Structures are given as C-alpha cells and as structure tokens.
Length: 406
Image (cartoon, rainbow, N blue to C red; front, side, top):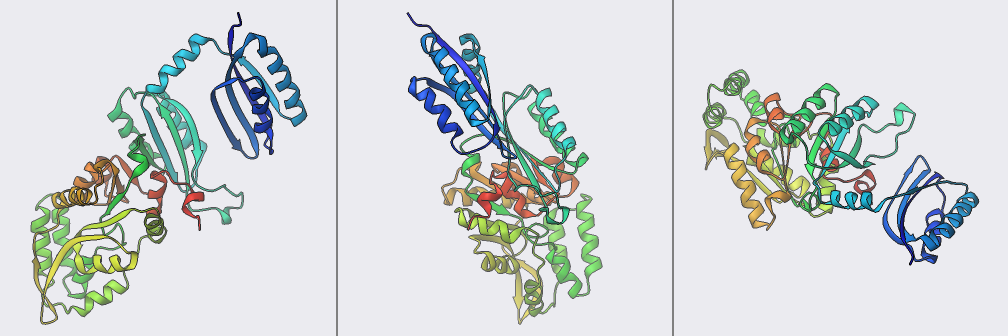
C-alpha cells in the first residue's frame, strides 16, 4: 500500500522562459496533485513555489528529476516535506477574513513598509501577498513618477478593527503616505458608482469665494465661512447668508469663472479610466449647478446635483432655488443614485474634502477624504493627501499597466 506524501518545492534564480513549464511537466508525468502554487518575478529573479501530493513510490523519482532539470536550467531548488496535520491547519486558515492594504506615496521607503508590516503583525494578521501597482522605479530622479503604490493582501481577524484603522490614519500623517484598509470582497472588486464633491475636490477652488471676490464681498463671505467652520452656524444658514451677498452680480461672470476653473491634478486621467471601465459618475456638491454642468460636459459625467442660483434680468438675485444640497442631502442622493443604477451601496465610492461630505463618505463602500480638513480626515476610513485624484485608482486596485492601456 503506497503512502501519500506532501512536498513543497521552492525554486529561485534568473527568470527565463520555460522554467515553470519544464518543472510542472515532470510533475504531470507522475500525475502529482497540485495543492498550491505561487510565482513572483522581482528584478528578473524568479521565486516559484509548488506544493504537490504524490506517493512514496514516486516521490524519489520526482525529486531526482526535478533536481537534474533545475541544474540544467541554472536555478536552485529546495525540497520541504509537509506534514498532513500542518496542511490541514493551513486549509482551515483559508476561511479567515482577508483585507487589502494599499500604500500611496510620492516616494516609497523602507520605513513606511516596516511600519505597515509591524502593525499587521501586532494585529495578528498574516501577509499573503505584496504587489506593486505603480510602474518600475528608475534610478534617475528626474525620470521618476510622481507617485508610488504598493498593495498588501493580508489574512486573519484584527485584534482591534477600529484601532488598526486609527493607527493607519495616524501613520499616514507621520510618514507622508496615504493608506487604504479595505475588507477584501466581491464588492471591492466591482465598484460601479463614484460620487464627487466639486469645490476643492474636482476643482482647486471654492467657487463661491470666486464669485464673492468679483462682487466685492470676498472678505464678508470669508468671515461667514470661518464662522460656520467654528460651529457657530450650520451649513444651510451660512450658505443662505453667503448667497445673499452675491446679489447683483452679472451672470456673464459665472461663464468667465467656469472657463478658467483650476482642475485638480489627476482628474483627467481618473475620469478617462472611470468612463472606460464603466463607472457611473456623479457630482454631489454644496456649490452651484452652473459649474457642475460645465464639468459634466467636459467629462461626460452622468449626474449633477448642486445648488441653483436664481437669475433675473441677467443678474444674480442673492437667492437660491429649491432645497440646499447639504451633507444629509448628499448621503440621500448617493443612496438614490445607487438604487436607480441598481448598484449595491457597497459598490459605491464617495470622495470629498469638507465636513458636509462626511455623511456620504461614511455610507459609501469606499469613502475617501481628499486633501481634507483635519476633522474630516480623522473621521474618514481612507484619505488621500499626497497625490492627485488619480490616486483613487490605486485604492480601487488598478495597476499602472491597466490604467495606461491604450
């Protein structure tokens, strides 16, 4: 009666065509069962692992042939017997939770990776896989890309789920990087709806400040904004007061401002990719519809919900039409659009910078505080502060090789 044996082979050396084919061909000849396999290529160096099951009658022959073949190919091989009890324990771990940790930074360094790995270890998680999402890094500083992104796949149950999220957010500020911590699931891989704030998110400006400056009331509007930020009045009250100060402004000024809107870095690249992969895109803004519609035409955005300024005889009246789009309304609109598009809320993404964006950021499957105020960043699960808007693509799991495909 033959006895089954489990053997792990670890192959390393220069990566070249035919290595995997030659070694698996030997295993195929003896009808070995493949229980696990993994391969990585780092700087043209191969690291290949195969765990297989065979009988003790064939194991010696297999190991001998593998050894000679690896010698021919110029690669090293290591054999490790695996006990059935160890294998069975490993199988039980496959049911544990999986998480994806994405690092986004201007320049990757060992201190950042060490800090991430230490937190993962402290939380009782195990790193299964590490992938580079951005392109290869040249030594010439002048040729380097403006960002670097690495993705960790980890397994287990965090000892302190809230604590690990908080620690990652603290670490992002300490080491000048952005960190996304997401549960791995089919919803993470099938995001379909993304909702953006407009002012200071899609554009690098607060349009109401631009309008106020043109109407000679810039300082007054700024004072009201600061009062609202101190919590002395709510968004609706501050919005109404600020809009009233725009009375008499000629509507032609709006067109002039729209044509010169400073688009946030990375927006063009992000929008191009989102449309290509089938995302529905919405602007949910406490700003103004006029400017949202300008961006809608520029980027083929699907939905725009913002505040409508009343116009009479070619001038602003200092009043608005309809309900104010505040934080609560943004969250309601996110849910509504998801229902209309038949998208699960866990497949949605929300991006914004202000306190009135927190409600939609908190309910979205992936909520991102973008170059946000400290309070917003502290209350968000993910944030981006080191790069442009296209950094979102890495949090979605896309590689540069995917993003820049023609």
